[in-house]
Amino acid sequence: MEAEKWGRRIRAFRKLKGYTQDELAKELLVSVSLLGEVERGNRQPTEKFLLEVASVLGITVDELRPSEE
Image (cartoon, rainbow, N blue to C red; front, side, top):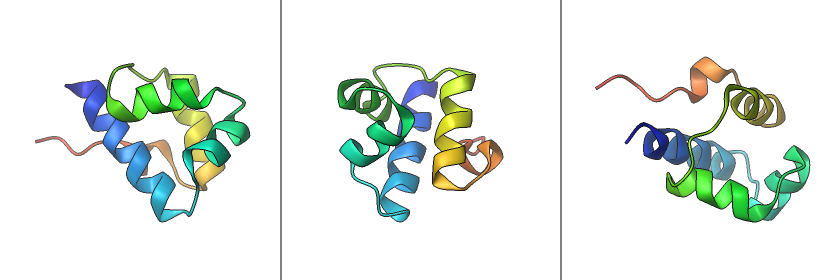
């Protein structure tokens, strides 16, 4: 469940910033497959991955963090 929330947030910010999965994956130096798994919630992102995503997208990890419901 937690992985799904992170994945939805990453996908939303990626689209908001105008990146395709391919473009963001290249910036992060990861495979499109890995990024897709994270976005679909099939893989829990590591703290390092979250920091890199936030850096590339020009946001903070706190902005990326799913809201507590």
